[in-house]
Amino acid sequence: MRRDQLEALRAWFGRYVKSFYSRQNASQAGIKLKEDHTRRVCGNIVRTGRSLNLAEGDLLLAEAVALFHDIGRFRQYAVYGTFSDRRSENHALLGVRELDRHGVLSGLAEEERSLIVTAVRCHNMLCLPPGMEGRPLLFARLIRDADKLDILEVFTGHYGRPNPDLKLVLESGPPDTPGYSPVLVENLLRQKSCSYGEMKNSNDRKLLLLSWIYDINFPFTLSEIAGKGYVEKIIGSLPDTDDIREAGRRLRAYMARRLEPFPSKILSRAP
Ligand SMILES: [Fe+2]
Image 1 (cartoon, protein in one colour):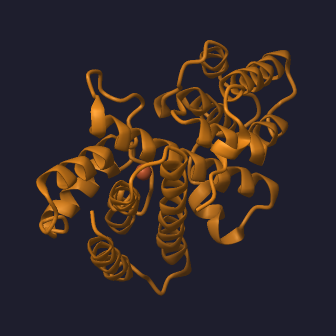
Image 2 (cartoon, helix red, strand yellow):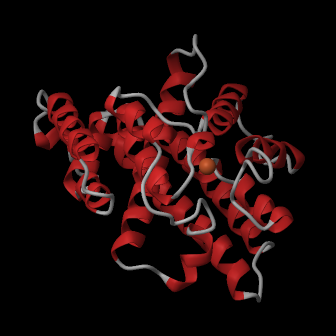
């Protein structure tokens, strides 16, 4: 991809998102949340790509993937008033339909179009489909890592200092009741990802966020997660039980094991 092509896609994204702006504070907060999330995920994906020494054209393509990964969120929020896929529809598939309906990718080479669509479609799957390989797998992994990294930032930031504008959006999920579901903590102890269907309350959502760490693809992302202390922040906001402490211990040991072979200068490659 060329820089001028990415600039044109960015300009389209800006116009598209503005068409969903609302004078109502609650609606605007939701749209802004996803617009800001997209901007940060674009930064995350480029930094991850640099850590892998991707060529300039692939860094631009990766940024286009990040730009569009949540494009379905805007129509989802406008139509259904929620970011819950279970209460509306799968926002990744909705996004692919929006890209197609507006012919956004029509000026790109066939391979680039296909890589963007595949990565957008797969970005929120519990696991990637078996048999994916090569460049489709690379770009799908990149967006999954970059997306998770920002979601961890948004949620852990919210635990520390709740943002009243985002309260409605971020707390519209499962209820804030005491305790947690044993199945979620068992999954975590077995290093398995949890699915949204298993969440019963807000502590379960925290366990789900922690389980993502076992699905992180690149050392750069893990080093960011370690450096920002997300595991400590989430564990610290959960009930202090033997299970949770053990889950935290295993997560920290897993991250240390995966990061050990990488010198920090590779992980924090400068722009
Ligand atoms: Fe998403």
